[in-house]
Length: 135
Image (cartoon, rainbow, N blue to C red; front, top):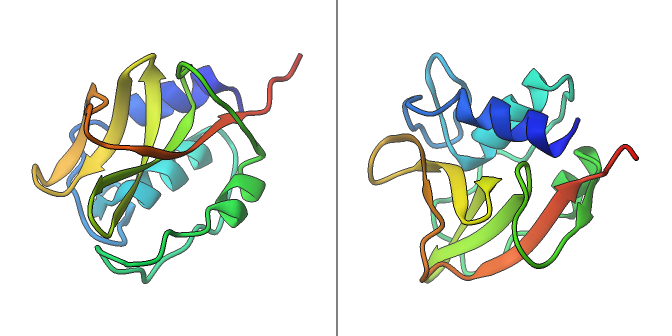
């Protein structure tokens, strides 16, 4: 799976209904569901976590997700297909897929759908990973 493939797959999900723990685009997706479905459309089947709350005092451990998707740590500017762990607010953690340097696809709970837009300035990035390059 390349970053460009993951970014394209994520963009195809824009407009999908939001649903907590959603893993099927016909019924709705949450942020983990967007990542799971986009990765699956790139031929990568994964068993990503489920059953988590919308808010948590504990920062989730993304290592299992990173391992299953063969992601490597990244830093600096985002490239298409980079996976970000963000903190949109206190006790909130959120996954997004970069489709450009400051543009992400993510499941927006407030708008009740998967959206593509600018990475919000006030959302700290807690993790940044990139699909392994096939060079």
